[in-house]
Image (cartoon, rainbow, N blue to C red):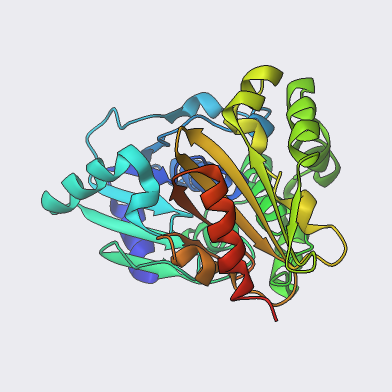
Amino acid sequence: MEQITNKLKSAKQVCIFTHMRPDGDAIGSALALSYALEYMGVKNEVCVETEIPQNLAFLEDLDKIQRAPKEEFDLLVTVDCSDEQRLGALQDTFYLAKRKKIDTVNIDHHVSNTRFAKYNFVRTCAANCMNIASFIEYMGAPFDRKIATYLMVGLLTDSGNFSHDDVDEESLLLAAKLVKAGADIRYLNDKLFKSQKKERAALFAKTMSGIRYYHDNRFAAVYISMENMKQTGADQSMTEGFVDFPLNIEGVEIAASILEVKRGQYRISLRSKEYADVNKMAATYGGGGHIRAAGCMMFGDIEEVFDKLSYLASQYLE
């Protein structure tokens, strides 16, 4: 932490990357660090390869986020990203920076992190925003309302609204500190988990009507097709959280959502309830994440994908 903090404070221009198809923890980590650096007088910019999901559209200053760097930088920081492939198109910029001998920093909380940067701070915890909060405090930057809000967004989304089994005393103490600094939990809960567009509601209904169950109902999977997205007017950014519905069904231990990104290519989100290690499941197909939440990409015919996931899940069900 001391090494990385010194790098952050002495940099002339910092570029902050996070993973493609970002969630609340990715955006919260990036923007909180960005504003803390501004407070310290360090110029910076935030880049994400893909567009911001619909459930985060209410956040302030999203126009600060760009698709690619506009300025020359002397320090590249990735947040909430387990490996460089998760950067999407930005991984080319990451590799170029390494070839130019520009220092790279990796601040993350995924158990599957590959320590891909020159300087790595990887600590598993409920949300990467907890790591970012530690760095902000260590740098001596204050928690104002804006930074507290970004950190709380990450904490709420990655902890499952404080319901996951990795929520601990540190998570709750940080939440209390953020509330004191101005983060409004009621408002954020409404925006993150309760408000939705009618297009998302229509896609949700179509998707959940087709839940498939396997292995005595211990594994449940849903398929989000491009055809259903087209019919309902929804887009990929509106599918965040779909996997949680089948997971909450009584008796289900592992849930999967299969998002069709193009013909023959699917983004898989995996969740488990009590004991199954979905990080290891995702690693079978080159993915990763957390023990209870992970993801990967799969290819082929959709029925083949269902069959492969069903067989894979059977290996991790007691």
